[in-house]
Amino acid sequence: MLKALIIDDEPLAHQVVLHHLAEHPKVSVAGQYYNATDALQHLSKDKVDLLFLDINMPALSGMQMLRVLANKPQVIIISAYQEFAVEGFELEVTDYLVKPVGAERFNQAMVKVYKEQQLVAATPVSAAPKHIVLKVGREKRKFILEHICYAEAYGNYVRLWTLEPSENASQARMSLVNTTLKQLVADLPDSGFIQVHKSFAVNTAFVIATDAECLTLSIGEQIKIGKSYKKSVDTLL
Image 1 (cartoon, rainbow, N blue to C red):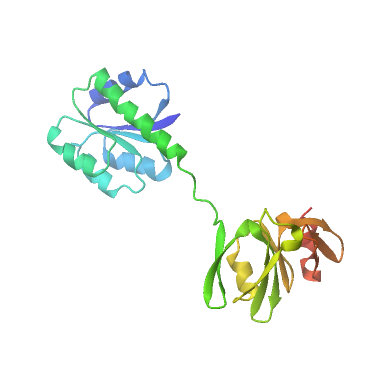
Image 2 (image 1 turned 45 degrees about the vertical axis):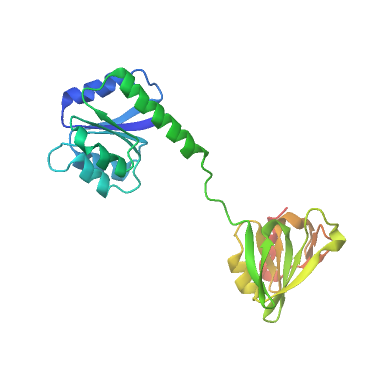
């Protein structure tokens, strides 16, 4: 369901839009406003998906509203003034309708809205980083997060053990990374990695068993558990 606002200083214009929307059950009118100022107050509290917007309104015009509006929803301008069409499309409106608006032209605009909405829905949400870049010797190297088994403090360096899915557990490889364990833990995503000792941090996906003293990784390594970390380790399995 798409939420929409109708913003026009003419009551008849509201009736026309509502009449056409009767053929579009996917759209719900969340508010009707007769000036842009009241509409902006609504948008500051509640997001909507679509605006049916007039241009020539008292105090604040439709174009002025679009220029000050952050995070614009889709916009269909409905105006008696055809000469503002270019400016409207420069502001990235979905469509520009000239009054009086017939059903066919209105429906064409709504097809554009639905297509655009599908594109928005299909856009993936920004995901957590899939890799981390660390310095090994003089070069920067990319490490895939899901391949990292565990990290061990080694002075001002870290021994980082990795295993690719195609490799046997005995083939886990160690890289000497130019960073401290404290900094590495800060750079790793909160979910998926946990520090279990002042000298060790592990990828929880590799943990297969725990006891009071240590935890066992699927690559065969046993990692000591520090006293101050026992509570967080208890929740791993």
